Image (cartoon, rainbow, N blue to C red):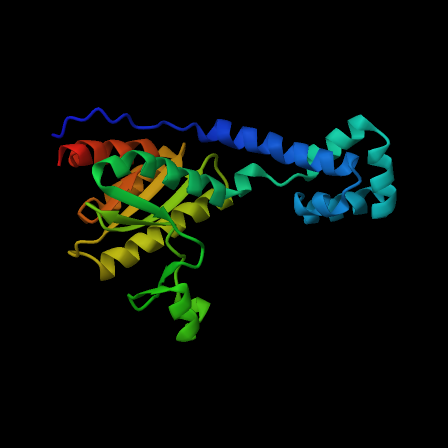
Length: 243
């Protein structure tokens, strides 16, 4: 086992989401009080606004005037209409990947956050870049969900990243997506040098255990949370300075 002075970074995603929700609420509040309709619309759930206007039988103009004239109403409206931080999963996933790379780069494992269109697996077993998908005119229904991160260096492969807390249909979809990409990897990449890392931070422990059990025979599919992944790299690969 490699002895290292590298310290893994532990994130609290519930606190991160709470802080982001407060920031979302503040942006909406500031837009209302500043009479900034453009900034207001950029930071709200528009469907929730439509429901609110319908329920109160108000026009937008009536609503806008009423909340701007009352600080308490403004704060209540902002908290109700602001984008939900738990639905901003891409921000959480980017933070997972960024944080892991801060640690793993010291051990020759470099992790790059990928855009939603960067690299996408197809149902026939290939991986294409976004530009290749456009060039070849590959239809979206021929593809799976894109990878969230790329791993290079001492490890090579891809990351499928998710942050999921609490039960509900959306969380079930998260684990279904992870299962689908793992099945794909098992069918087309088994025995290859490339690794698929399922980077899952969640309180849904039973679902994570089921994923780990299902794919434990595949030595190139690994299931970690962000802290476990950092520890794995730290204990598996020497620091770059010692190489």
